[in-house]
Image 1 (cartoon, rainbow, N blue to C red):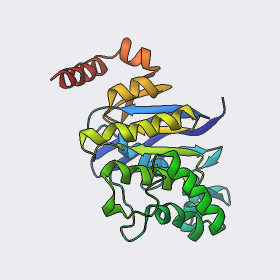
Image 2: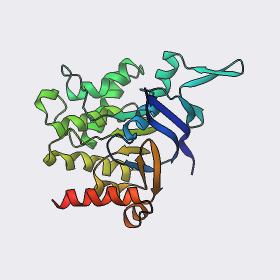
Image 3: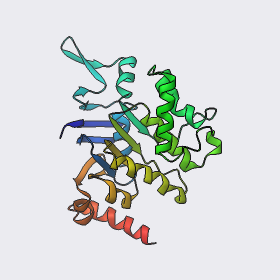
Image 4: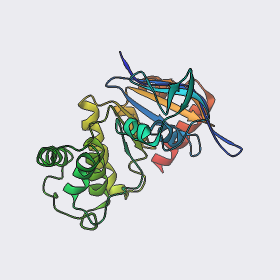
Length: 258
């Protein structure tokens, strides 16, 4: 299948800490890749680099065949201008751990703001699309509520609708349930299950092992900035090859039981 995203030899360091250490990853059209691993393994850095919130130190990334973050100029590569980087970033949707909603905007306006202000889309058409998206995430009755009037799970679902409103080629989720109370987690995971069933191309960083096993087309286990193991959920969870993945899954199983 066509690769929407391709990463080759990607490296990223913060001072002496090597956050990404030669990452190779492809994500095919309609594929759901779930990234798991211990804290500090490079999972969040990976998706932040794809969204150009962090610049890479080495390697390359391509979105639909277009080099991410750089352009060729007189036979050499140079960083994209801020405008060029912003144009690329609009093709990538991202949902963070924190909701980052505009507190003075309603749910509806939070979803319509970027398409109207940044993409210059027709307001009436954008509002119709935004209402449909909010209904899709189960918030059709919360269109005119402000973030302070919504639960954490509802705010995160508005954030998902907002990211979808720009019609991204790929969606990135960075621990989308980590800031939620346990009883609100499943309502957000339910939305992600629906998006996966609809064939949306996604990378999901998560610590929710049951969700990863259920929804992923492919699971990627990271440690120390490297992809240690990758495969179908049946392979990764049912027959882990590396001792580190076996230890990681064993620890999470014990935590779930306790």
